Length: 349
Image (cartoon, rainbow, N blue to C red; front, side):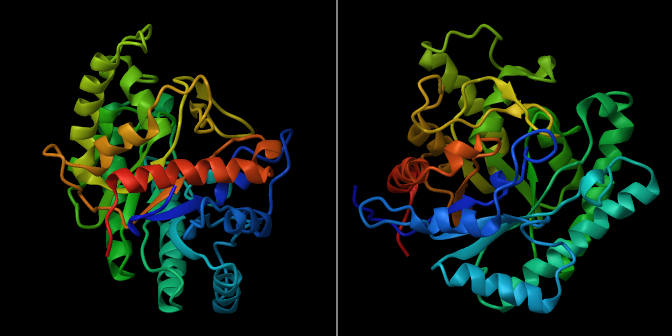
């Protein structure tokens, strides 16, 4: 496998070392280990270009000083990597608050966005972060949202609008992550509705993760918005891609951050993380996606032309077992899948 394109850049995510870990579950995997595993992966001379980070201890303290940010930049660059998208810790357990909560909760949400944007801007100034967004979600669950959908959707939109003001002051863009576990963002239709309510397309876009968006099709947590039946015959590829086209046509125009992933059409959660789309290895026999083909529905427009909306793409292996993540072969498999996506849907610059 030889790489002919150099865009989009290929990133790994460090946060699978933290998300779903701790408590009664498996211990976290430290940032140095995640960086080393990422830097060591290689497929026919092609390596990962960078890493996306979660701004949360023990990886990156959201209240990092300028010196600590400098140290982080040096740690990443010493491994031949750059930094892309940053995940803002907007949830109550991490110091944030619900985007549809009381005024004080929403202020905590925005405080975390402000801190994340400060770090992002500082990393840009250090030359280690040439692209990427600040990732957010509603920090609310679908059940609570459903108590008053109209009111809560408007509250989230208002909070996101204020977050856009913050991002613009720092020269950042926000990417709203589509997952079935986030209230107001738990279905493809509600996600589009929210983006339209905020109506700041230059500042707020969509982060599409192939593992999560697959469940949008099945209507988990929002049966009324399902595009496929719960007992869909996965051998019926024509129907699948017809509905996948409908899904991607609705969300692609908003997509500014993209995660390559595999999913087996089931939900999974570990640690304190709510159940959402299960991330699987690229070669999982139960995986429902032809990764390279499905990625094209996100990275190419309706006429088949490349959108070039994402300067980098990322692999998110959230809630993989530690044994799997600490196996170097895992990252070579993942890198090979990402190279395949880039060769089919990438470009040279």
